[in-house]
Amino acid sequence: MARNAPAIDAYGDGGFRLDGARHDGSVLILRDEPRAWSVARLDQLTPAALQPVLDAGAAEVEFVLLGVGARNAMPPREVRERLRAAGIGLEFMDTPAAARLYNLLTSEGRRVAAALIAV
Image (cartoon, rainbow, N blue to C red; front, side, top):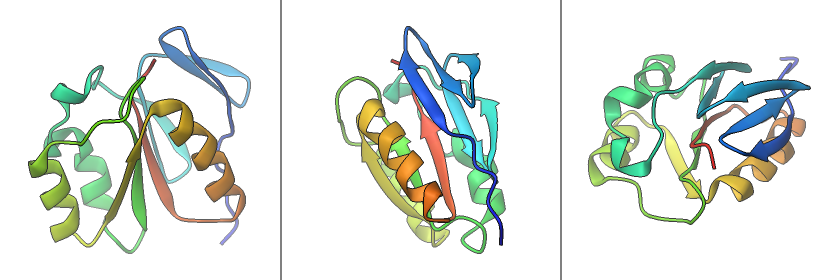
């Protein structure tokens, strides 16, 4: 399947530049489509915030690449358990590292969702 994932050109100042277009705030990229994401801090992350990913399921998403903000931290247990129960993997790291890894993985054609908290 051909991929048309947006490239993350830059991040910082409270948002991202995806394929040259500025997106203020956090972003969720699913099925190669970026959308505004309401999670501004890791303590706001709930399974409901990742419902679009859960709805897509493991057939469409190998794993979620979670950018947790400026510094790496453990996502809430409830989130980790819901993704595991759905058969969707989770990789989490600081948002700058997640943005770089997203670009690499999508260039390889991987089926990854990115949930990136703005820094």
